[in-house]
Image 1 (cartoon, rainbow, N blue to C red):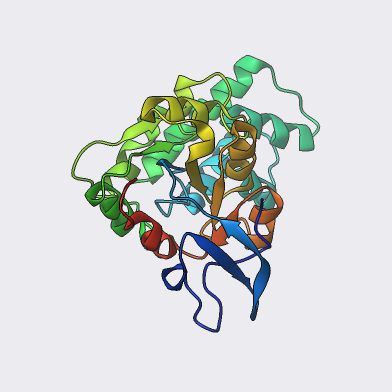
Image 2: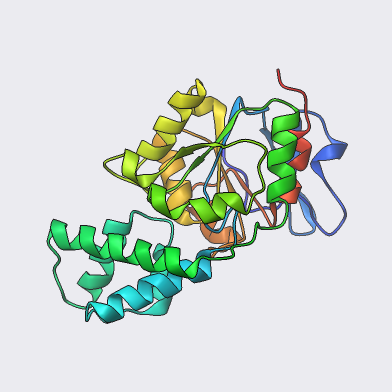
Length: 258
């Protein structure tokens, strides 16, 4: 069952710590009447850009520069809404809005060029609030986790370094699948590598494409309002619930693994 459009904490001070496994999620000033069984996930899978690391604006800048180079008029708001989706798809959608049709080879070339510009710009990314603490808590309590990102392998190094991890994480990047988000491929590969059924994991992301990919994979999704999507947009795309920051997920991570 999906939660009402909600946050994990409301103005009255409600938090998951005060309840057991069966938790009511708050909505506005009143607790929602429906209760949702939020079982401890068997594994966690995270988006990278805009979820763990503050790189969305850098992504937007890279795409806009790429489209300018290629003579394709691009609207910033449209590009922002497409961040997190398959880069080839992003190129195709923006070009179509400008009444241009791209071949598959040109989609690939534009996606690759955007990644090159992004890598040049993404020199000092910062972890988003709660990211380092959450991943550390997952490791301390031996909860398996991975990163599933539409980005290519060569684009993720600086962002992962910003997380100051004790060991290299499992990363499923866009180069490992035929279709990146909103297709479920990345999440299904990640679940397989973690050894869990998709329905027993959580996918944490900041974009509607993350929520749609999780729904297609049969995986519960948690929306983080740290990218370009609002809480309502994330819930409308399939989020089980939303949080304002990753720190709100720490109570889940600190529970003993079953």
